[in-house]
Amino acid sequence: MSDRVTTVATVTLSGAQQVLAAAVEHAATLDVPVCVAVADRAGNLVAFARMDGAPLLSAGLAQDKAYTVAAFGLPTHAWWDLIKDTPSLLHGIVKTERLVIFGGGVPLVVDGELVGAVGVSGGSVEQDREIAEAGASALA
Amino acid sequence: MSDRVTTVATVTLSGAQQVLAAAVEHAATLDVPVCVAVADRAGNLVAFARMDGAPLLSAGLAQDKAYTVAAFGLPTHAWWDLIKDTPSLLHGIVKTERLVIFGGGVPLVVDGELVGAVGVSGGSVEQDREIAEAGASALA
Amino acid sequence: MSDRVTTVATVTLSGAQQVLAAAVEHAATLDVPVCVAVADRAGNLVAFARMDGAPLLSAGLAQDKAYTVAAFGLPTHAWWDLIKDTPSLLHGIVKTERLVIFGGGVPLVVDGELVGAVGVSGGSVEQDREIAEAGASALA
Amino acid sequence: MSDRVTTVATVTLSGAQQVLAAAVEHAATLDVPVCVAVADRAGNLVAFARMDGAPLLSAGLAQDKAYTVAAFGLPTHAWWDLIKDTPSLLHGIVKTERLVIFGGGVPLVVDGELVGAVGVSGGSVEQDREIAEAGASALA
Image 1 (tube, chains in turn purple, red, green, blue):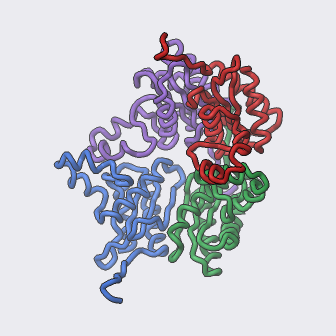
Image 2 (tube, each protein chain N blue to C red; image 1 turned 60 degrees about the vertical axis):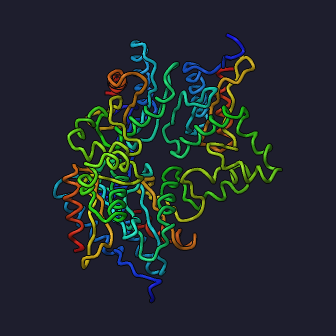
Image 3 (cartoon, each protein chain N blue to C red; image 1 turned 45 degrees about the vertical axis):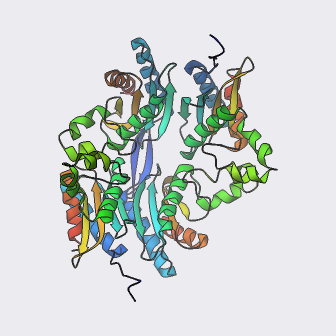
């Protein structure tokens, strides 16, 4: 291999299912039915679960949260501070396709490297974030 | 309940995950990495897995196959015989959004009732159908 | 790293620009202005050029050809033989978003591994394929 | 030629590649991996590069910034002052497809004439603008 090719670490289905199971389990302890999506390093869906009673609207949001994290590298709850004091960004970037700027999307990090993302939707943004972090910690 | 309201039987996350696991296991015995999607009675995604090495293109197709089955009630491999001798259907219905007319989408039936669907993509249409049927049989 | 994470080899910008330059140079010797797109292993765009006089329509087609190859692993000219004798596929799969089933999309392979794809559009399918292969050979 | 026909000056691939190279070089000196897109006078993509490590989300934003500039004639950072005091514009125009109202899109001007645009995304809006201007100055 030369500088023409690089290698990218990315979550496997096995790893994604561990994240999914940990997130669903944590959501169940909170009694908050959510949708959970796990994306690989390139933002493509690897694993998904909609818990019984989770809002249908959340299915897309969970996937978009995971995509946002994989596509930009930050947890979705970090976006607000990034844009709130720049009015042109605040008004202008929110419409970006699949970009979610509120909590619930969290990076999957292994050995210090971003390898994918988990997105959760269905509870409050604080609950979604907490559940996503519980999922992510299963991999760390 | 009166005649103004009805109930719909639909697969749970637990049921969907059994279908998913059985399909993934069968695909592994065939050594064919696929995407598997399980939809509820309304066609909405409940559970999804992309096996390591499955084509990215299959992620959408698996979901569309499950949707097609839930949305019309037939396995996707039944569509061709239904439309092939009616040119207006053959040319006119195929473009319907999310409609898939080849094998790999199979109904989930419990107690004679359609409760959801499983869609598989990544192998040949025969393999996809066989894997989807292996998944569906986990619920029957 | 465990089985929770895998590594994927993918083309760099430097590698993609070598492919792009080789394809554009070959197209110039044929006097056929084309669009050339290079995608990474996950199908995301890395490098693109529209030669002067290339059809505008080709800009999207070149990107879709590269995406198709990365997302399914086969050169786009291999799709026709794959589907021509199965009427349900022939009629049913062509509408898949971004799927291109004619020549001009070619895998980028380094050390026997798929690391991305190049898509060319603007000439005949034979010319597009020849130009894409000239591009791909710059990386091999 | 008569008054029924006019000519439009527009950047060539060669010119676009000079802009691209200058922008990428400047981004490298800042150590900010970005996506760079060059559009012609009509807003259509001519050349594109995604630097290694640039956010995936930036690929579309860079192209939309270049489009916005070509399609309206102003740098994208000029939009905010244009709309901020007119609530109907502020709330009503931002959703326009592909319109970007924050920095990073810069006109390409030759002999006083708009001939295309460069769009940069991946850093802060100030960095994106600085990199785009470095690219544009290669053509001036």
